[in-house]
Length: 306
Image (cartoon, rainbow, N blue to C red):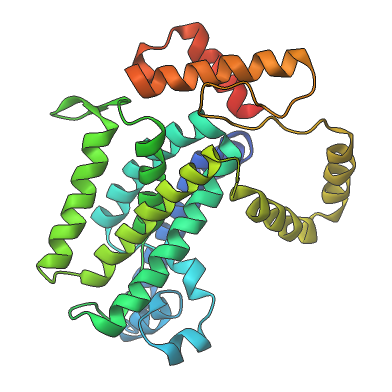
């Protein structure tokens, strides 16, 4: 029991102290473990036939009637995995692209991109189920949400290099484009067309999010405010304290990807901060993240937490 208690305390600490990518990994892992424990329990009790019915309650359906009866499935399905290889592949890509996005445009934008990508992916899946063959009756998995992070990483830092087993260092743009190509081939071959359509939808949402952010329109703002209100229902004291503190704060800096000086800040210090941030982001676009100095990487990391 002491071992399990220690593991539980480690998980709780990682969830509280970790960034949003860590929290998403923990949530997806916890749901995966729960699903398979239920599967095991039903198998032991000779009620294995019930498992598909239980799982289907939280999967994204392909028909209107089921969706009306299970409206929560449009959210729950993007955290749901059953097969180990499906789960492992999504966990690796979630960490890979989530860390890049969080480092470059801030931790608070990771979850909104994830949710928006998952939502758009589920909508594309549902639409494709009405018109395309070989879609299947339900969908589950975080692939659409993760492809949104992949699309965001592609636009933000296409030349960022990551280390892949057996392949060595590979630029993000090649990894993402291969994933997109595989989805297009899957649709053309009529193999899991709904799932591949969901991936493409998530990818497009991630790209669109970053392009809007470049134009000064941050789609994460309304989502974060909604999430803060929801969390406030479970911890009203903390929510009131956060609101009180937010009224005292200066307006947050505006992330810019251009070379101009318009940061929206009123004082010289914030203007200098924005100019340096713009210069680093431009350098990433031209030469890749790996060519930044350690000082520039530290500055970028601190900017993402600001």
